[in-house]
Length: 141
Image (cartoon, rainbow, N blue to C red; front, side):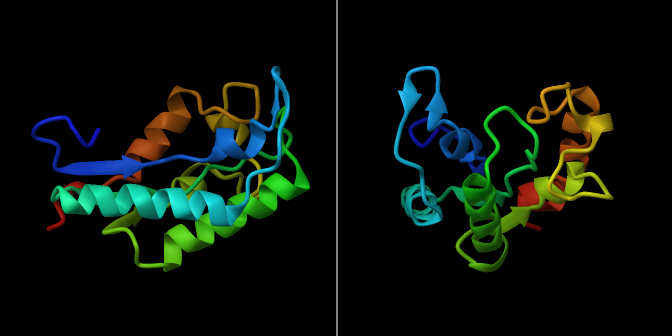
C-alpha cells in the first residue's frame, strides 16, 4: 500500500487473525500480545506519514464464539481497540467493532451481520461497516 502511487488514505484493520492465528492448521504458536500489534501499527503509521498518507485506525470486530476465540485473544483485542480509540496515533478512527456488535453482547458480532462463523461479516455486516465510514473520515475535512 505504501508504494502504490497516489495513495492518500489508508484504513488499517489488522490483527484478528494474528490474535486467533496461533491456533492455525500449521500448529500452535506463541500468543500475540497487544504490545506487539501496537508496535506493528505504530511502524505502519510512521512509514505512511513519512509518505504523506493519512492513516485511519479501525477497531477489530467482535469474535466471541468464533472457532479460534479465547479469553486471551479477547483481552488482546480489547487492549488493541482501546489503544486505537484513545492513543491519538491515527489521524482518525472508525469503530467497526461498535458498528457490527450484538447490542445484548458487544463481544459477539450481531447474527444479522455475520456469515455464520461468528467471525466474518456478511453483506449486511460489511454494509454496516461501510456506513461507519463517513466521507469526512476519508477526506479529513
